[in-house]
Length: 350
Ligand code: PMP
Image (cartoon, rainbow, N blue to C red; front, side, top):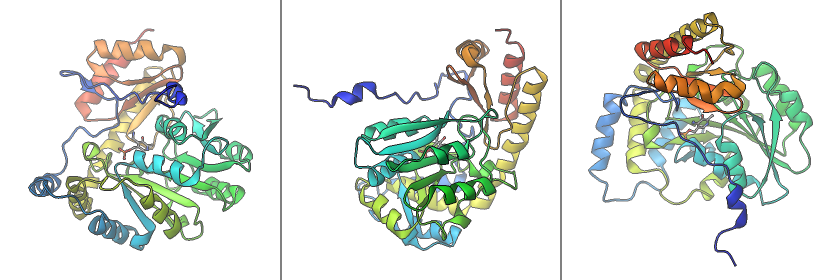
């Protein structure tokens, strides 16, 4: 007899980026600056009603998101961070063992975790030689048991985007009977004009789900709020499997204020983009391989030197994120923090 289902023993752990007082944290793709002042004001005001439950239907925030994308509120599901929506997607699409959830690898480390929690089978397809999704190989790997496919653009942790034309080909090849989740957690940092954007594809593809978050460019990772844009059917299903009151009143109020002040908040993304290109150029000049990134991080495919590189950076007071045996992901942050990373990396001899 066991109280706990035995397959939980093999569940990979989500390893959070370490926060060490006094060290520069470039490990979790956060923004170093606090939330915008208007967001902080809204949070404080909402906290005053913290004795009350939040709005169960997340009505106002859903309407604001709808206005942003010109989408009816029925086509939006708000969640406690987009990672929770990933888990809800497994719950709405998979019954259990035998049902397959596919994603590229390496990609976002939560995908295998939420798949296994949902009791479904993980199917991974390797990235191509440029650390990009190999969408042709993914389409070819679809079986009659494939229920859900995560496509991450820009890809965490490697950085490249999926291109619009290849994604449209992919949707056509996969067909309408598989849920395709396009995870756009880092979309605000994308500058490549050929990058896919999910919103324009939604009307033609009721099986498409676009995932977005307030955690990155909006500087609200600690508040936990993300959303899905999709068909009314899938959005309703996502809301059904969401535990009641998952999105706190503080998170809802903060996100509404963030949308109101969106232009000024997102203006800061340009600084990150400029720093991203500067960091990449410096690392290339230091002899590293660095795939072109469209996100707020860069990837160093250091293979079995990944852990040594991370330890070396920590000695130089910089915390980066090793994903052994593949590589190391480094968040792009303020110029002086990026300078510390560049100095540490340049001194790496391992
Ligand atoms: N998707 C990707 C690709 C991510 O990198 C992250 C955050 N690391 C998330 C989703 C989850 O974001 P949230 O904070 O909204 O749960």
